[in-house]
Image 1: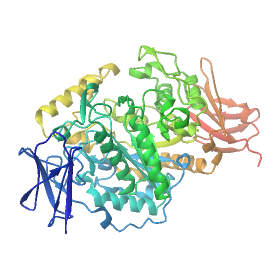
Image 2: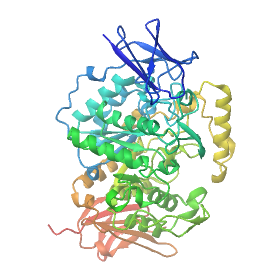
Image 3: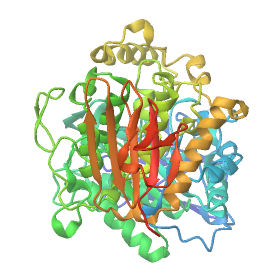
Length: 578
């Protein structure tokens, strides 16, 4: 049994590894890599690195941190797991209905195995892909995961490498693809030892969360390789089907080949080698279609991106909120614009940003964008973590669901949304440093001032109860109102799956009509006519008088001159003649 230890630390004069109670010196090459073979080390052994005789440090590429971010790294043999998904080939991203979940709050267990026990629910709901919020090792046992520091190590409290492999295997057996949310714009504050190994960070740029990653400065080649290798690891060693790149608008890279493009290029090469579909989806706040435009046309070639404009337009319309970035939205025409062209802002002035913003998507197909009424950001970054179902009527929740699920985008549903969960999803952390805990709590309160929320409305992110109150309550599924909402989501997803033309990015007809009391939104696509009554009085839908009703969120009267549509109702008819 022999294991090779390697680490990149270009400025070091001496590097040692401690394993099995012994210390071994590593030899370096001209590129800053240090390496040695230890004959009696192997899978399951814990180890540390020491640089120039300093403190014991975990491996930057640690595959497992069983004792957390400050503990030793553990050797993992990825080839030892016996996979059962040899026939899995995945499917095209445009076919996906994605379910975003947080491993720690999705079940009482808060583990990968706990997620696996609820796959029947997801299959019955009709989704065919899950997106795990970040799972790379972060401080403590609870957190959103965006403060990860050991990017190669599945979180120990979730079940570590073996737990993740079991989950992916189970998902593939049930026809579910698995995406991993990865964070390449910053690294968390606690347990972040990367800077002690090499120039992983730069002070030439800044991010809202701290030092920027060094993608384009001196010695950046190995930093870029670190990120690319991490992306490929999730897809190769854990058989995952795709990545969601967090907040790429905060990545500064002036290289001729942007790091996003490099990741996509390498992922596509791995896809061709493995013979199965692999996806890269990015979150961007820039309204810049170059992100998803094909590389031959000067884009980065990312396969799809989150589309916040659709969410903001829908949320502002349904709730009436105009604080923060919602000041730029609120008209029914904003929702129509988003359904037609993804971006509402394509170069016009934004009051929130106080500048012109965005550019048109051009001929890009709309399945290159994700559409959602809720997600972890738009729920969790509210002061109290309240869901849409907590602030509008059930009828309006059903309208939001219909527009998102039957949109020309790839739909995304956030955990618990499908049954209008009573539990909030709040921001929580588990930092061990008291000073950091205090700073995070104070920063969270400052962040919400622009939305008009007072400090006493913001729960303490470091309190255990903030985490526990965010955990889903599965017993709610037996309650009438929650079960009715679940039936609605299930019916919508089934209708989407039965209407393949929705996934072809066909031109949609969208218009709004309103006066003092009446407000109707018409959306027609793929042979379906959807009408949403957002006004104060019932409305007669003359356009559908002779059409068969496919699905409705309330009882409708079919009378001479049209269907009577109650307030806060969405109804869907078929225009297909065969």
